[in-house]
View 1 (cartoon, rainbow, N blue to C red):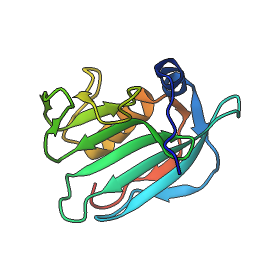
View 2 (view 1 turned 90 degrees about the vertical axis):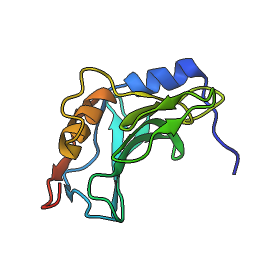
View 3 (view 1 turned 30 degrees about the vertical axis):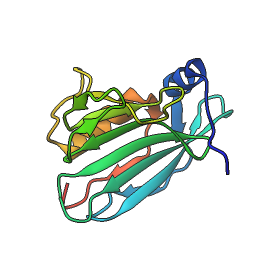
View 4 (view 1 turned 135 degrees about the horizontal axis):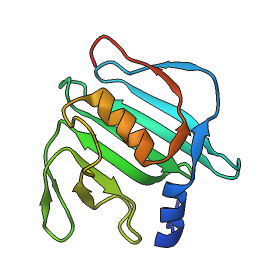
Length: 148
């Protein structure tokens, strides 16, 4: 299967597009080593998205949140609790960091977390801020687990 390549202007528009949950399911925040994929849809119902929540198998504080479009294109990915990231230009970005789609590179570039994010050591707060950042206006019902 060929990689889907988006023009930067299209990727930026998809990231900014208002998104909402597709169902009324109550999701449980994943335990260590677990993951969760939640379907989302644009408010105009023309685009489908996914919100991925991925937890480390070993480290309680480590995880990833992703906003995906067209099944495989990562528009935004937030990594926390892990190692720094080295960008293609050799610049190192400390963790937590945010990967944003960049035409020709996909999600290979990281940037520091935006200043309007709250407590960067709180995985639950990072999820709330990430959902706001990717413009999920009607959020899925996710229940906090014991180890978050």
